[in-house]
View 1 (cartoon, rainbow, N blue to C red):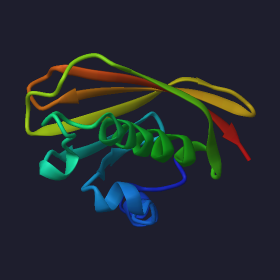
View 2: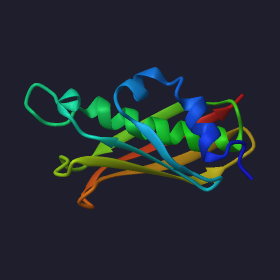
View 3: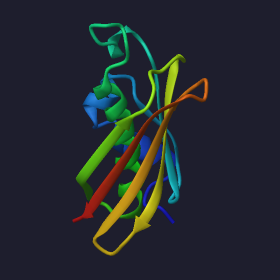
View 4: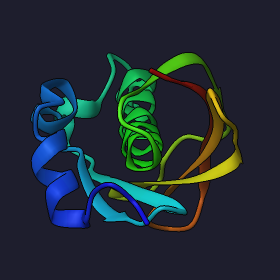
Length: 131
């Protein structure tokens, strides 16, 4: 069983100010997966009118943090990588995090980011270190 229920996790992760002021929020959480979402606005756009890579990364990072800390609190990111696959075409981004491995001192989590049209936007892999 996870440390947080969804409402407790939402309250806790309100302290992630960069994510929350960007409109990113936790939508679902269990001890097996986490889902974070953001409605895309002009705030998320780069100088060329596309969605900034940092906005996509921050969305994935919140899903990673919620899931890893729901199994062991505190867990911090030790190493992360992201592969950008496609430009979003929809109005919303969805990050779905799941465990690849959950070991004694570290965990590996994959976060798949899609838009609301089902388009694959990015793949994020994070290694968490359990403090």
